[in-house]
Length: 106
Image 1: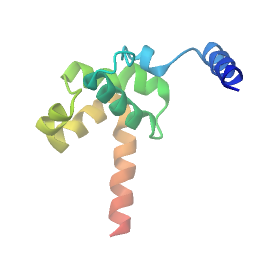
Image 2: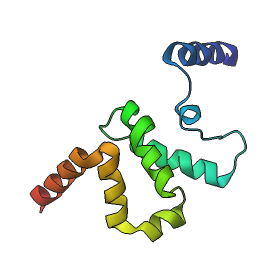
Image 3: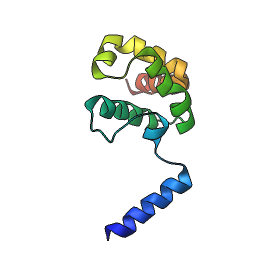
Image 4: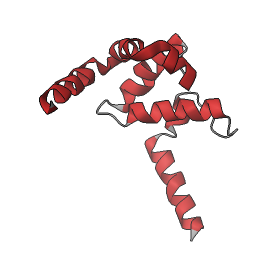
């Protein structure tokens, strides 16, 4: 049963170009908490309505450049600092949509 699943996964990876974690330089094979948190951050970015190209090439790289890759880094940067990183990383349109949505809900 698992042999068929493994073949399907390998086929998809080959056809689609590999793993996003590898494209971002995140090594999940070690089980290191820092690497897992980097993947958690990336998965949040991938879960928005921004293309994976923007996430890989711009937004995640901005978090790397700013050294914001751990829970402590995020807390230290604060909301305004995180929004600045997201703005520079191509999320400015998404942030505007979220703000508009929140105002409409109140």
